[in-house]
Amino acid sequence: MGHATGAMLGLAIGDALGKPVEFATYDELLRGTPDWRLLPLPKNALVTDDTQMTLALARALRDAMDDGPLVPLRLQLPLREEFVEWWRSPENNRAPGMTCMRACWRLSMPDRLWQDASDIGSKGCGANMRVAPLGLVDELTDRRLSGAAQLQSALTHGHPTALAASELTAFTVRWLAAGVEPRELPALLRAHAHANRTRYDAFWLGDLAARAHDHSPEEFIARGWDECLAVLDRLDAALARPTPDRDPCEITGAGWIAEDAFATALLCFLLLPDDPVAAVRRAAYSSGDSDSIACLTGAFAGARHGEVAWPADWVERIEHRDELLAFGRLWDRPLTPERSATPAG
Image (cartoon, rainbow, N blue to C red):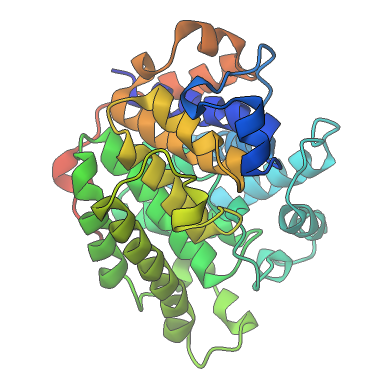
């Protein structure tokens, strides 16, 4: 089925669908393409910083795991190099997020701890728009997946909600690729959030929490999980009264921040779980951070349906197609629902 390939292609397809309309109002969208189901993929299907940074994480993850089991330093060093290389690249001209740019500038200073480079107050969607590759690697235990998802966020976005939303995004990809039914996801995600609400993983994060003003690391991380639980409440309410023709950003948030991007992307997927093309069109045709929302929706839909989800002519046109396919092939291995579909406690 090629679930990893489907996810890697899907995130880039969603990104490219959302790129031309990211800053359009909903009225402007309606004037340009009155029916969201007909939103076209541009002939020259260019991606944004979302896919660029996803590929940076994918390269770092591949290199880290070539050296042995994933541990913080083994991931942090190549990921830091990849992020700085992205920051310096002339191709970094796709309206990148300012938090990522500032943090990567600080990461470029070799004597600076990554915790001091992180923006402890930012929970922008740059934290989780790029996390999907981690959910596709079968060798990662749930605990390693949790820690790595939070670490990759924390290099730029250190807010506890960014950490928690990145973890939820990565587990959603893992569970869908493992064959979990879409309707089961909200309950699984809620259970996972409750089980990990006060677990601060110092092995992966070091003393990051000391940069905030909470009384303890447990209080720090609980703030993030509580905000994610609140957005899951909004998601549950939206699914109880599904309205596929309404702008999803009006329901679960515009996607500029991590928990809203996660919830709105998941909403678009869960509204249309058996129609991946419609799901990414619904996500891109939105009034908020359209490329990031559709990028995540594409990752979810591709992880669920595999590479057959996407029209062949779309795949042919997508920027970075060869690299996306290479990573998909690398990680196209069967996941284990018995292990992966159980919330990590």
